[in-house]
Length: 198
Image 1: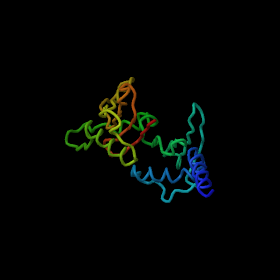
Image 2 (image 1 turned 180 degrees about the vertical axis):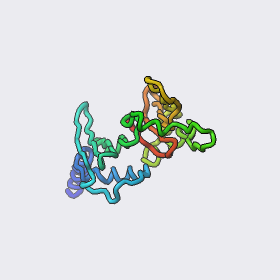
Image 3 (image 1 turned 120 degrees about the horizontal axis):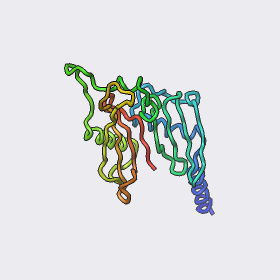
Image 4 (image 1 turned 90 degrees about the horizontal axis):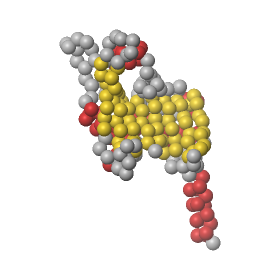
């Protein structure tokens, strides 16, 4: 009888764990990811008072929770798998900060006397893989990463050039046309602006 009760308790724990949608239960995952990403200025300790938005989204067999900390750092939590499935720095990610006033300062200096210490494509791919490992993911489950560097080329004219922002795709082995992991690397400030996985 004790074995049956223990088995029922374990199953109940797995069921409740498999659909975590309580903010307080999700915050430790957010903290762990913020530490793995080495986010500068992230609130420590993190409390519910630092959360500016919390939303649970259900659909297509998925249960996701979105947690936004201080209107800036957005984390997506996969409630079925109990892991952070995506992150976006809403202040620096090119997907959000796509305005000239945000991007022009990132262009390399026009003067050749100024040092511009930016990662290369290869270094950006290695940087992305390193942080995926820190987050608990295994980049070897995907094909070799492909890094592409963003180019600023405004339609209205003006200064153009390569930005120090890299989009690094880790293609699926079974379907190379889709990415298992997608990482946006800021090659100038050496940080992750965004990552996502399925």
